[in-house]
Image 1 (cartoon, rainbow, N blue to C red):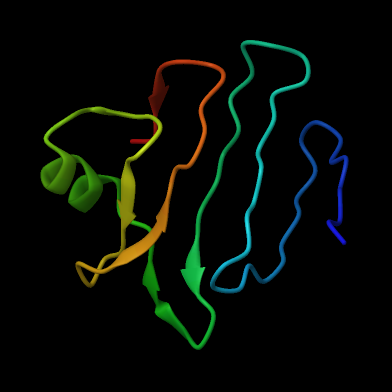
Image 2 (spheres, helix red, strand yellow; image 1 turned 90 degrees about the vertical axis):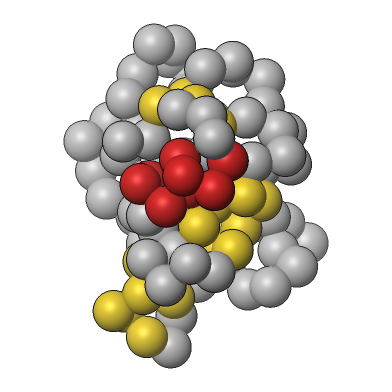
Length: 90
C-alpha cells in the first residue's frame, strides 16, 4: 500500500525511501520551488549532488530517465516520470 503525505508550504518532511520504492514530489499549487535533498540512509556523508548529476547527464535540467547522482558518484535514484517539464536542481 502506498503512503501519501500532503506537506504544507514551508514545512519539512523526511523519511526513508528504500530500494524499489517510489517517491512522488508534486507541486499542487504550480510554479513552486520544492527544496529537496537526498542522503544515503546508512551514511549521511553521501548525499545527492546536482553538480555530479549535471556532469553525468550532460544536461542542466532533470526529467524522465535522469539518474540522480550522489556526492560519491553513485546513482541514488532515477526519475521515472515527469509531468511538469523543466527542473533545475542546482
